Length: 212
Image (cartoon, rainbow, N blue to C red):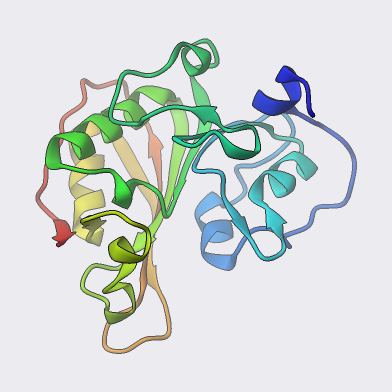
């Protein structure tokens, strides 16, 4: 059994070679060159793929890493993202990088989406970045995404939703693209946006699609 610090924090900095094994290409592009020694990262979801936990890649590259999830597995800080930011995360704020790789689409109800994105906005420092990769709306491969995960409906942002949110909340979009092999629609919407000014949060559903 790991001790409490090991379960909640990963302050691991070392000189092991940079490796991209644990992070898929879309997420790597979203991160850009923003992960380095001392970068403060909060990951939404305890993300993994067949090669391992994403946290391994962050810590190999020197980042100060934390993650949050409703289930608290693998050291994630337990938090329902629709609710007020928990104290354990408040004391760590603000972050240089906040990542949302296939997570926020599962947050339920319109008001829940607003609360979740408000929290994300508050977590990021001025000059910090949000990296987000979410399913492409109406893409056939995601037709059962919510059903398969036990969630009754899934919220998918179109690329213009990110543009709207950036304009309303003081962000500059550094990279915005769709990725995938399926036709006629790609299967992922990917964005990296930088917070350039401190603004009161404003939310819009314009450009957000809900898959029932």
